[in-house]
Length: 137
Image 1: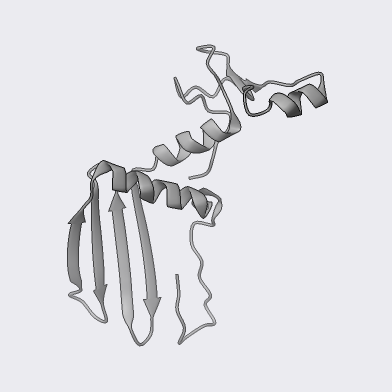
Image 2: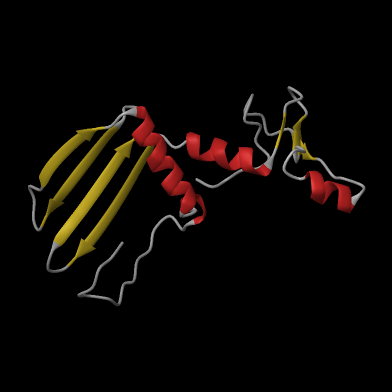
């Protein structure tokens, strides 16, 4: 999933256009207050920052796995819809499994941390086939 600046956060239509400003100095001065995009379907206007927020709110489930030859695999699944985190760890199957339920405010903090590390601009996976004894993620 990536950030789609041209998808309307209100109606989810992709029939949008970028709003261009004629006066560059005034536009840069007003940038924080002026919308960057307009939806042709519903007329909604929004900024780039609102597109970023909308994209992170759309994350329903996040899975991450880290593996190491000597310490085994650790898999974390964060379900934002159910406010549930599942943590699995082990060298071989069956793995130890733990669950934790979080408050909505705590899940929002997790979303903000994901935004802070720019998660939606990462590659889907990182694999180095020539590393045999290091950490893979």
